[in-house]
Amino acid sequence: MLYAILFAVLSFVVFSVVYITLASDLRLRMDVSLTDEIKEFEALYKTKGVAGLKDEFRREAKSQGVNRVFFRLLSPRLGVIASSDTRSWGKTGLRQSILGSLKDNNELFMTIPHENHHYKVRIVCKRTHDNNILQIGHTLRDNVEIMESYREIFGTAMLTTLIFSILIGWFVARHGMKGVERVRETALRIGRGNLDYRVPLGGEGTEINNLASAFNNMLERIQTLIKEMREVTDNIAHDLRSPVTRIRGMAETTLLASQDINEFREMASIVVEESDRLVSMINTILEISKANSGLNDSPKERADIKKVVEDAYELFLALAEDKGIGIKLQLPEDSLYVLCNVSDIQRVVANLMDNAIKFTPEGGQVSISVGTDSDNAVIRITDSGIGIPKEDLPHIFERFYRGEKSRTTPGTGLGLSLAKAIINAYKGEITVESTPGKGSTFTVLIPI
Ligand code: ADP
Image 1 (tube, protein in one colour):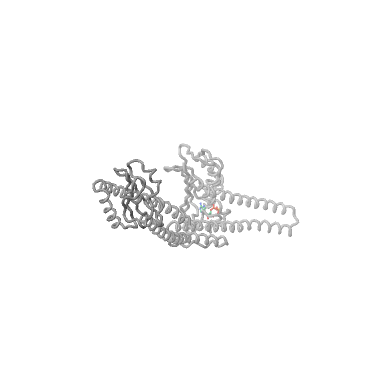
Image 2: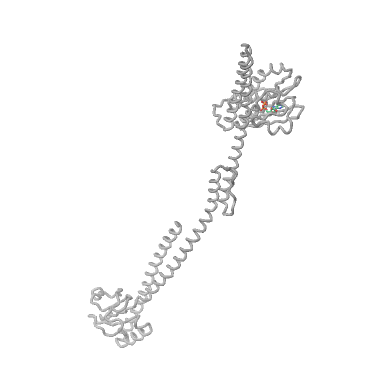
């Protein structure tokens, strides 16, 4: 509608400009031809006198139409000396007011109403050499008719175009809106709880299709996120329930069967231990979520990776020796700085070392090295342990995932997913290569 109104207003402006120009152009043409004509009569009057003029008046009026033109030769007081057939014109053009304006030798133009007709008349008067007055009157009927038919043609054309443009505009808008309507319907359905709906991609033009496919992509992402969230909550519920059930069972048994204070003491210490495990698990889950959502905005510092790894090595040395595992350290000569939160990197390294020692049997070997490639600090932890089966490899970085063979070893299945979440937050990379029965190598890249 807005475009139709704009179109109508603009068309009206164009119409008016053309109308005014056309009207003044027609008048100008008429005045030019009247001037030419009156000059011819003047010359004729000079050479052939009243008689010659009279003949010419008659002939000319006949050829142009006595109802369209009249010619007069008037005395200075407006008495008619000679004229064409002026029966249909009456006294049109014979008013005294003409004399007042007709002072010099120039043509005097005026437009006056016709006495008997509906159309106005354009009149030109001019003094002759002997002080008489030559007068020509021409009806404006032709001009008015041209303007009328112009108005008619333009009006019809504009009305038709306006109707068509409204119809076409309505059609195009409806067609375009259909796509938006589809997106809206899908959004409404999803709002009612079913995330499986997608906007069907139609043929309404690329913009709507782009919108629809962006909308679908967003839905896909939301659905994946919700699915992951459900899995995580399921896992959490499951993994937290077991220790709580264990604690409860133990307390119950002790309560029912035991009289001995020492057994209560033992029960209490197990409860403390299990509760600590629970709390640490919950903390790890929180940390993973925090690292994943990128909200880990604790201040970063210039940390020496070489030092972090060296410290971890010293920390795990005793544990490895206890288990009869050889541990080898390979460090660069110079310090290697990256911008990070030291405790984050410490956790990653500690988790990987812990796993390496945990999954390596007695007499095995663990080695840890620090190096660089073009953009990253590279930490590599290799063990000669049990290795990871091919089918487990894609899952070990998932929350709560524990390999089939490692169920007997203590653990939560959260260590690697925390490590990955942290390294991802630093825009780094963590990868694994492993041969079952021979050992595994975890490689961590952190941008320098
Ligand atoms: P957790 O060690 O508590 O089980 P992680 O997330 O640290 O949990 O590791 C997930 C799983 O990946 C482990 O249960 C184990 O199956 C496998 N895994 C991790 N590190 C090693 C390793 N060095 N050697 C063999 N298997 C490993």
